[in-house]
Image 1: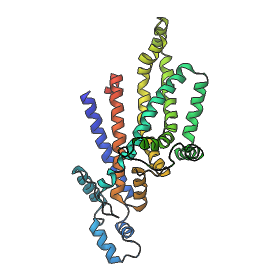
Image 2: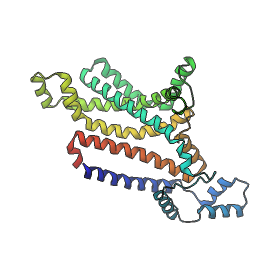
Image 3: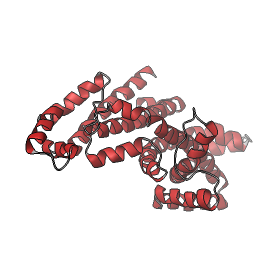
Image 4: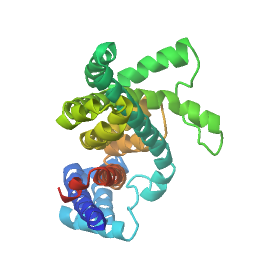
Length: 313
């Protein structure tokens, strides 16, 4: 298991370097345009040239990326081009908001997708048909449309939950929970339906195996067969889908935070990208990669524990 974990960590570190390097190359534009955006359109040519040199934008792109990577290894993500504030400080108050939204959505996605997917595979009937419709609808309807519908129904028509905003848990626990209900529901609707559909397919494949029929002929309780034998063997494909859903959760969080005016990483990422604030964008991208990689490693470890053959794959 230690070697298995070590391989995953090394491959994840390589992925972080590749993705951050590609992102840096894609978002970088010429130095004078960035400097003019920082100073304003009325800045003189001399002021722009001085700003380019101050920010180090006159250096080759690869040199700038290696400088950023070196700062990362020392625990620094640089400072915003526009405010001069350290990127770590900009992210410190926003990360808890996004993590609350993403992790709670992920937990609900796991629980509901397993329960609904297994029930649809075992029972079939109307539940299976409802899941099929929900999976198609969840894939077709964007999360922000679901969010707007939820706000209209549960915040305006029936003012049960707040329409916008975020309450830190250290200020008001109940207010924190209430502020997350609609955003979490908006994200979970689509991801849960798709993950449940995958669990359903994996369960149907396992339930059709010969050893499952053998267990049934021996008179073993059906619930024991489903949850101890079938679900364990179907967990691999299901867990893989859930790890992929983490990417969808992060993307959905960026949009949902803007719909509900939540001061999380989504708003920071969007504003930094529009301004061309490279250090802030790189910090946001790094955060997203770390969350996705961490969840994927956790899923791989669980999958390796459930199915030892996965450790050698």
